Length: 212
Image 1 (tube, rainbow, N blue to C red):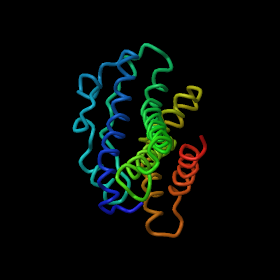
Image 2: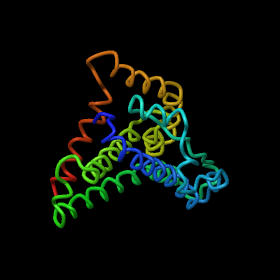
Image 3: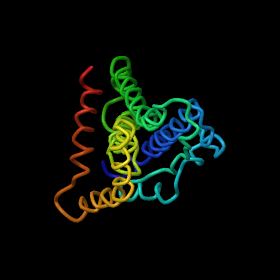
Image 4: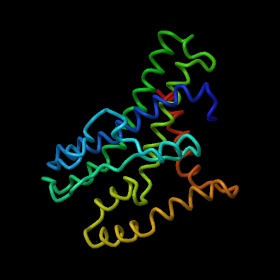
């Protein structure tokens, strides 16, 4: 998907909503488990300006890779031993839920107003982008590399000793590995992130739009 104007116009609202709901889900879930840190930071909100990282947003438009401001969490406040796992999964679930809703709207239009999905109109592009952007964010954040949600998910699933070792390794090398995977996709014919994210995204998109 190139960043032509016909793509960019629906991409902007989809991206802002996807990122906002992802981060808000983290903050809201942490609050439900007894940690008000994100609430005090003003992150339990649907205002995208509270979640956007300026540089991460620019990168998203330029190199198709970006990030939001991390949601502050204090695990010492959690009232449940598995709270960290649910807080980490919350953003991923929010994006998967949005992908399903965009797909449901696609199927509703295909049934009741099939002409709305013809060609590359705004509505058809918006729904397709909605599915793909949210699946991309969910799959990307599932990668077990710090600072992504997947690293925190793995850490919360491992026994304490292994979790500690994994956390140390991930925090020390995760960001470097992630950057290396990104750069490798631009300087060589091998694109690891396209395999890790693009392949399952394509399969899931086809499943959501054609597999019902």
